[in-house]
Image (cartoon, rainbow, N blue to C red; front, top):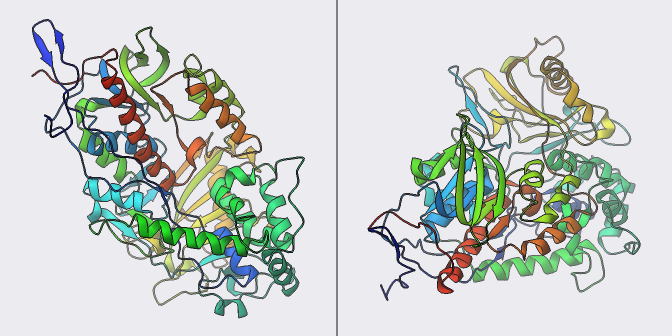
Length: 585
């Protein structure tokens, strides 16, 4: 016992003894890593604009050995060391890393739906189609690769060809003529700049001057929006044609409402980071140096899956593979589906009591030393305020309606498109749609081009998102009208004149989709963090707090598991109130 860290309190319950072995968690280490390889030169303003559009990687946690107690402890659902509410990416990864790497065996993961995954919904049918109704892919990060390896699902991992182009639809207003009006964003800089005609020469010059640091100072009397920041740095044209469709595709958001320092905080930090003025180029140069140093200090383990910059990832049967694997790892004793959280309170003993309504209509109470709440804001604000009064401010976090629509079309129905090859009319990541082009859809993922096995022979599969903060009326439309609108948009951009209507495979209308990091969002989070100090052992998280990307949510699970384990360790060392912690000895 002395070699593995010690024995926690031994509790005598009648004639039964319950044991728990504890291992001290390592210090948490952090590494920042861009999932896309930085351009070799940042001399061009356009290169900087594209760097803005490329999603950055997530925080990378420590590379720690799995630490287990040597005993497989089945959780008593009524009494646990940690209760994780919500089995989306954040909750599933928290529960997994608690059990796998932090020695916290006695836990319970709950989910309100009938299956795990939260908003991650992957589907397939007998015809051979595989599609997503929530998130569609991820930018690989070391945190994701660590989790994939430790879950044993490396063979299910699929990575898209990093050389596939990403397109922006734009017609007229000085832009060059491109096949189907689809402009491929440059991948080889600066060489591709000579043929990149989405920006006019005046637009490129304006962006170049701003990127070099010839900009107006940031406002001091207000929080700067995404539109204000990008326009101040790179000009209105770069914003309108590149960043606006990016914001629509990532947040389904309104760039006049989104806070730059909250929604795109890594880019916001570049201003002032450099040694040669406030330009983004100077800041990016120093940031790349930081990344290189951090990567050298904490390299990924050789056994983890590898990836190239610019790739997107998924799994053969979709993203729900990951939470499904977590459920399998934890086993039925430690996972409950169809449990809706109704309330949480803190008892005088310091234990948290959570009340659930099960799918059978029964009321269940779970007593836990710690709680990790990874539910949507609309739920958290209702159930957490008794413990975290500032959670009431989550009422201010807006999540707009968004519909995800999956359509199938025969290959011969597509018009001539850029980068097409024999038998592959679609050969790219997909296309984004600037709001100024007047097309209602936000953007379309070319699913069958990205990942293998998404469509049977002779078909292509498209996943389109529509709605968002600037199109709230989507929530009042019927599924039939939404599908009709998406089909019309697809025909206008991708399909031949007279091509038949596509086949709708799935249409999921999310009444509350991506939380918007609007101006004032960081103040809300600061109030919650301050309120949490009065409730040790209660951890609030999810994509409204840690970032909306898949990788952000995975990394949250890694980091939060370490925090929970440290809290439980400190409580055990202090001799705090204990609950049933393991199977009988």
